[in-house]
Image (cartoon, rainbow, N blue to C red; front, side):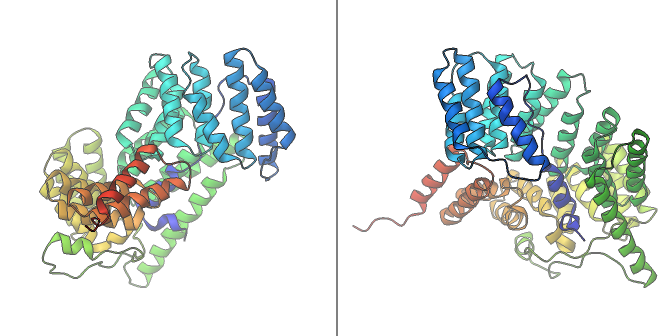
Length: 474
């Protein structure tokens, strides 16, 4: 079975990393169009696009010779993209950043510069470019708002990302399908599977041929126990594609195979009288939650139970409906009922109950609900530890917050570098500067794999190094 089926957060993180179309907004200049035509042809031929030295120097000369500032900036941006394709990423990034720093009214250019930086993996600089484009249009720039939300999601700045994506939706009167899809990805990353499913449902209503949304929605429904509805989503998508004479996207085909395979594993286990569920991760009778959190390590996940029996499933659906309707107290009651009907534990219900209790500021109860997931199958759900860390930090229980963030980082830090940053912050508050430094360095390394880490992150590492260094001998 594919790796991303190991947990709800893991498969949703996969959806969150789906490619975003950083399309140019306007007709390009002649030189830039040549760059893009070559890039598209190379991609279609499954080759790496490469720029010749002559092309680079020709663009450089034309840019230097241009007298109009806007034309010169556009040519230099095409030069940066050409350099990036040819392996000159450092020079390309520096040039694009220099262009973004220019003070000139040209929102369309800054939007395109943001797209170029995003393709280079320079999320922080791309966000700066998009913000500039948005500001110059007084906030009325839906595509720039959307792309800003996407790069902020990549950076783990979820609240800012939600603001940008919601703004993009408002500007398009809630008809912007790609922004809806990106909002769904953001909800999924935060463990809000009900909200993610609802958003992807809206995406498909707005754009029925959105294959990524269909696959993401089906996987989420299957993880929540509704294999039948998950397959119905894919059936409907494929029927629409057939009617149009279109090919079914690979992602939809993969999602179907994974869902069917998981359901077959469960069915076979039932025939044999076995229960397909994760084993306990820790010993019972641990003295406190800190010891429990320390007991969970990476690589200890067990197979998942992908089918939820009635009547627990009916109660789970009722809880989700109440939560979506902003009736949290009723949702709490229904989640607890689903857990009782499932025999005292039901991972989706326990996790969603915990998040609902957080919204009611019932933090002790929320932590207890999430800890039940840690006891049973903590290795499968890195996001449980993230939410526990936030709860404990809010309550001032730094030792437990630190252990929770440490497990989140160990289990999912490579996919969600934000976990390292949270861990570093708590360790610094505890005065454990060596560990704060190690976590900050891990954050920078994780970001370096896809682009240039922000300057503040490197500054944080340097400051922590000074604090962690032993005092000089007299």
